[in-house]
Length: 533
Image (cartoon, rainbow, N blue to C red; front, side, top):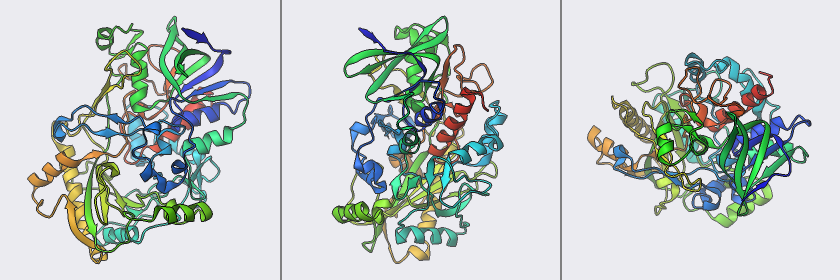
């Protein structure tokens, strides 16, 4: 039985991840509107969420993680890859490695060229700056008055500094700001932290909106479908405490559930590939064949080496770490673990943009950290920034509680270019780790292993070990063409009163981590909704 909501809201937002938190905070700035924010997960009370290095302890915590798995991947030895996504206030911004990276300016100019008017770099830069509170201060590229705190790391492992020196020795430039005048080069990542604590979207945006009477945030509220009347989205049906409820929206419903859950909710509500919906007994509200299509992600390979000295994070004293962090907000507890990294333009790059990204971790990281290896070591991640492979999200069932089918189709591009670029990235990573600055610490190579030197063995390594680096996008693609799921104002085509605002609207994946771009998308969407853009 559906219990009627006590009141009608102006805006109902589904998902309190990075985008949903921004929307809730910005739209509720107007005291004349009522906003309801629905989150399937719980509150972000867990202390390991707020202590940056605690992310290593969150890996197995299913209470704050959707804990998704892909279908068997044909190009990766039929492996089912683990796709963690945040199921908590703040979404994945509450469990990620906090790297603040926007991508390359040309990524957004490319969006505009694809028919997404209003999304060129010159047009989105003000929204990046509006969101940002950069501890270095404001300049052409950065803001210092926004809700999202961006800081330099308070603690950096000596190995991370040496990895940067090694990259420079290997011929790559040093770069102290990946979001400045140029992206290419190696340096330390700036992070979404404030005074040594994680600055999730929930802390940054809901924190400033706390206490507003016109904003209601409801956790453990699982959206099941959108209701329509005469082609207009009018209400969200959701489960809360074992009962079904209905929240009406007088103005708009905003889906901000991410690249997996947003297309799932659209399809459960009758918007999607018509034949697939009918097979599951779902009434078609609007035929939209591309819902769930255009799935893109950054596929990542990890090069691991033993460390001959005990200076890594593999065997730290957890109690000492926690006490130092608790009383000083200093030390290893403030590390994001993936402290250093960089962007490289390989010989296979198609234009001036880097096509490879690196993250250096002063610890051994195998299978997302779930496989704990004995001893000490360090890891260099490398991922392909602009994959040409495309996958899809599909419904497994008409039951909202059944996870969707996730088919990334990694390395499926017909020319095999994604695989060649990733293998080149593995070679570059090995060359960096072999430089003199790291020689006093570098022991035997664990993966791929010293015997893996030719193309065939490196390809086999990629197929056996490559994993996601957590950047799925594109499944509710925006564009001006009739096939796009959303238009350039993020309105869902074929219906009224419904928008999607999250990583799923990206027509092409950006060249870097995706959290900062999603926050920018939501900042701009809030202005579009309020007709301020």
